[in-house]
Image (cartoon, rainbow, N blue to C red; front, side, top):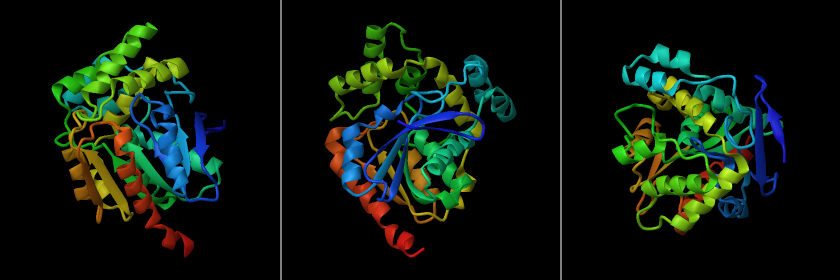
Length: 303
């Protein structure tokens, strides 16, 4: 499968699903996750709806470049963030969400795609939002799922969820799978959350690329970028915001705030959805994404 090299020398691994003659839909995954966190059957369903689906590993995850020479002191990072020392946070960070958004541009360039529909989840939606702010000419539509605006007063985690997110998992395989699945279940759908599916994803992620060293740099990118409120207010782009009402990792007011800021944005609050995309809700989610991305096609055809 292909990789592309960004102008800064970062190699980004990506995969595609569907026909390249269909409208492109770039999927952007979240914090500490690999492209396999998008279930292949989910992407195939989107492709069957007439979308050319593009998945990729963010830098510092999966099969993309690892920035081992750029260590981040998590203690100093958290302390600076809690103290509101924005300049210090930026000094500690190895990169920002804008750099991660530039990685998305490099993928589109490599595929010869001028403009794409972009769907991001969690940190991936933060990247997608930043991509829309920095490079609006490269997007057809934006879909922001399970995310927030970077404003600290919105989208807060429950104490249990944030503790689980930041707590290191064991390095030994079996223990890692169990603890990782425990974490996923904390923020999963209360109705549809599946221990079996969580363990399967944890095992596949460990076997494909166990790399905990990348998560501090990704977290630093979020904190160093800060709020995106001003940029979101200026967007002139068809935007869909999706958020689960069961989400304990990013409260649903994060999604509500995103939709409030982006002019004309549509908000879809989903019952029985946490910080996950359970298979039982795929029909609803796929229909919403296909409808949203399809609405822009007449404009594309007219250019």
